[in-house]
Image (cartoon, rainbow, N blue to C red; front, side):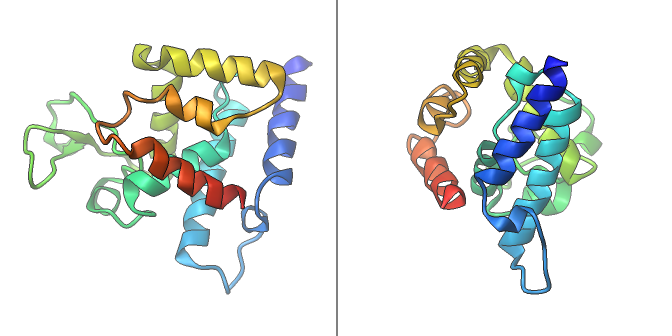
Length: 178
């Protein structure tokens, strides 16, 4: 029963705290609106069906990080491999990775779909030992029923080498929360 209640809480808080673009896509929608909608749909699905309530990733966090990492879905890594989050891989199979033009030693994962990329990101944050503090903070925030993006982003300092990454992502999340 608590799982159903938590799922409803996630969905209700998502739809009550987000712009109406998440609810309806019309002919007037921009490419950015479509990007938000697609990433959000996948994130809601992952949160509802594939994880425990205390591990659910806030939708705007996933949208904000993917918007920053992929240039709102316009990067070469999105176009060639559906990688919306800049996720690296150790795969040796060249069909499973892409390399940046300036650094052939880096391997970025390829995904079959947008949702595969979102699910990969969500799995990374909820399973990788580098993000233990993120999971602890997320669980604490769900328990308190108060999501604080600043605190969550600070626990993701290992996600990017860019010193201003957190500021850039928080700015996007702020725009989403409008």
